[in-house]
Length: 292
Ligand SMILES: C[S@@+](CC[C@H](N)C(=O)[O-])C[C@H]1O[C@@H](n2cnc3c(N)ncnc32)[C@H](O)[C@@H]1O
Image (cartoon, rainbow, N blue to C red; front, side, top):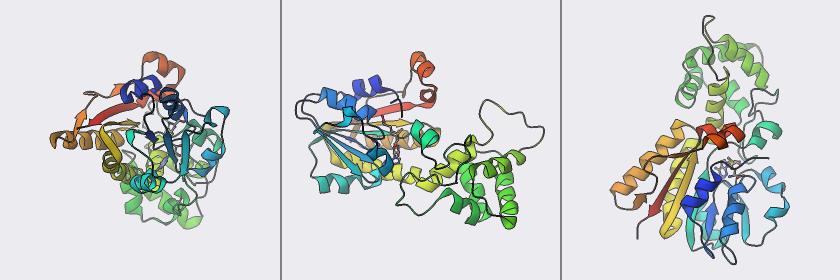
């Protein structure tokens, strides 16, 4: 389903001990949560929050443990979830912001430009906005803005303009239709690097559909509110937009004497991990501790 990234490093830095409680805000398939539970017996609990109901339906033997509480909701509602579940005291909060391998390979929701699927890209079916709606309805300037801001795409203007031209003739409903438009938006002389031509546009769409950057900005202060004094917050990010939000938040809180930053530089994956799981190459882990 998904290989958890920086697993050893997350455990070393969150430092879970017997009978402590943790919140895993991005439960996915529970790789990190199970490793935490292994350290927190006999009574420590994990509250696993996952937006995608489908993922919570796929359970394995390891997840049949009564110290695990699973909630289908967005981590943007962290404070409310913790209060509702009466969960605590909380010694650590984890956010693993990447997209799981299952999303790309098995979700059928158009996360991958290598599969011809409907343009959906929602983590939760409760959300109304889809990638199809953005591509077919949003004004050209808005498309250009998200491709530039969220995808750091140099040819954002061309891509947005070509999308609008094509959608006047027919609905753009699938990933392959979009990939074709993107391909035609690059200058003929452009030398493609290591990444696929559609990588940045697809990243931008996913961020916009799921409101990812706003959700991250919202959850960070809530993580500090729900933590016990001395508790830790760990965030794994996968691109510079996410990482700079985390870095800035930690820095401001440290200046205000609320937090102590435990990772002066972000922790990255070892060469061995990257060889076994290439998706780990862009992962960055930052950890901070709430002051007493
Ligand atoms: C990289 S995966 C986590 C993998 C997990 N650590 C594991 O070891 O299996 C990130 C997960 O976050 C979920 N997610 C994304 N946005 C979310 C949100 N706002 N609230 C809760 N879960 C979210 C995704 O559905 C995805 O399953």
